[in-house]
Image 1 (tube, rainbow over the protein chains, first blue to last red):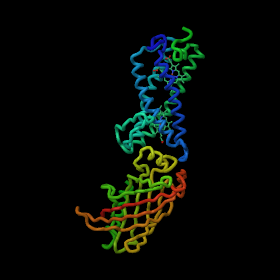
Image 2 (image 1 turned 180 degrees about the vertical axis):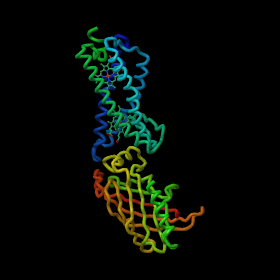
Image 3 (image 1 turned 135 degrees about the vertical axis):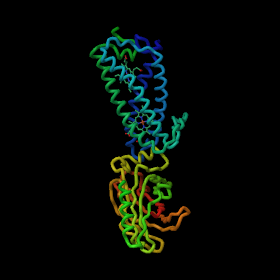
Image 4 (image 1 turned 90 degrees about the vertical axis):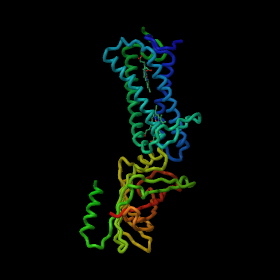
Length: 184
Length: 190
Ligand code: HEM
Ligand code: HEM
């Protein structure tokens, strides 16, 4: 079992984090849009935001861990890409980290602006660091905007991956899925 | 800026008028001796209270001619504060006040009827882009010199609003269709 990322492909932690977080982030987007439209008498009116905040805090932790893991590991060989493609891939890959960080922090700031802690699944609670009533307004606007931007970047990223997999037949999906690319 | 101009115009009018004239007061939001509070039933179980933190206004008041009094207030609806950040964002949003589309609320009196120290202040309230006539039941609490060389007048008032009348249709349940406003106003004579 490959643990570390090498020039040949991604190791298990990177792969699990990539696909686990991808599913969770897409799920969070749908959950976010759905929950703000619930009516007051919906049984999910309180539950859905509780789950959204809880998963958000877990994702924030995972993102930080993933970032550290990324910088202490090699990146798989991308020499099959043109210079432009390589630059684009790097911008998109590294772009995810600050974008997701800002998305999750804006959510945290919105929920904690009044000094309340965030209860994560009745498991532990994350206290408010900055109590600043009124901050929830810009934080909320930023949160919605950043969520849309994230999804936009995911679409670009996924289309690029699919293009390289099926058009260029570079086996890039395999590298993130099973750890090694099929045609090398 | 517009308010400053309005105040200046009022002051100028007062200076130009005969000596016995209604005095102009600025509502003391600068030192927060005024508040716009509301409460609404939560599912019929209890009262949820909140307020609008940012507003400003002026009034004219003359003890000798109280019917000539008038009041004008401008409110920033996005300053709504129910002591819960996420709820306040919901209240600012499209389901309720839609403050990005309607960034201002206001009240301007059209008539003041006095009965002892009780008054009925009728005027136009604009909220959520809808202007409707409302009547405030007001009481003059007291007026006189303060310890710092100014003259103050203080009032308290209440009125009820039906949310639907102002185009706010989010269903909070049958016990929560009306919001009660409680207004505490202290003005400093200019
Ligand atoms: C929320 C969704 C997603 C996020 C945040 C995301 C983020 C990332 C990041 C940051 C990398 C660089 C490696 C790393 O730092 O871990 C990466 C690589 C990759 N992603 Fe995604 N991704 C998402 C969804 C997807 C989807 C839907 C696909 C497939 C259609 C995909 C396919 C890939 C592939 C194939 C790689 C490896 C590229 C290479 O070999 O360098 N990702 N992704
Ligand atoms: C992957 C991370 C996240 C994604 C993709 C995401 C996505 C979204 C989306 C799309 C909305 C709906 C926005 C709207 O239409 O107004 C939303 C709302 C919300 N999010 Fe997130 N979110 C994430 C993380 C977080 C975190 C970490 C928190 C807080 C701890 C949070 C708290 C909230 C809250 C409180 C709302 C409701 C805002 C409202 O009532 O208008 N989110 N989120």
